[in-house]
Image 1: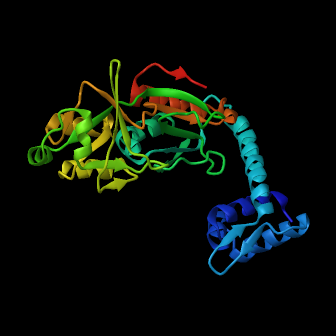
Image 2 (image 1 turned 90 degrees about the vertical axis):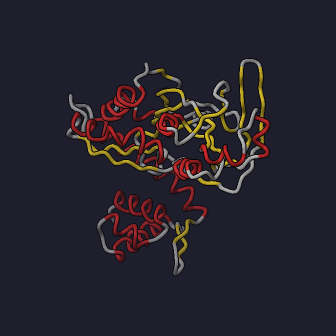
Image 3 (image 1 turned 180 degrees about the vertical axis):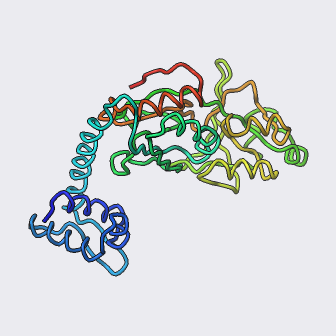
Length: 306
């Protein structure tokens, strides 16, 4: 048995929750993937997965083994990268993740420039509003908006601040009325982002003043572009980042209200970070991408925060 191939197959089977998809990802036959897992389990003397007609699930032993093996494979990949990524020119596969709307608005227009500057880098972009596990998903760089307190093990570089606007269409404000103060939002249809855990409070600050307003509405989405479209169509009032709605405000499609207040959901941090694992700290391709973001996307001085 090729132990390394068996370990890679086990991780792929666990990630895919099935043998067929894992086998396709590895470029092998399903029977070969199944055989490798059988041999691996036999060598360990324990079951790692439970099989059903629909999916594969990890046993308790499998879950523990998965965590250890993913760390091992990640360290091995980093060891390879530390050698191959030590040349003068950054190269190799670079897997990055960021929120969907941020990727479209802030990275998309600059992708060509990055690829032209670094012709030996293969850029693999994963756009999702979910917080991915960098080890399990083999992520090199994650762009995250908000607090990094839950990611104490990561190195984070501050990209820029993240000002938000409370916006609505002229049509909505004409029909329903413009709220005169933050507390008036309780009487309006607010378009809400699906935070976890679900707690919809918009926190307003102006000098020493602080107002926490519980908001309600019939549209909830885990994607800010859907909320933007809802606001543009007159469905209600939304709390959205400046980089997403500045153009709409300038064109008159949306009106920004409470401009003299700083507002954030649940009083959370409003900073944008580029984060990566400590074992990526010497990677030329990681630093190339983060520095590119600082130059092209934020144009603000970097700040190390962890």
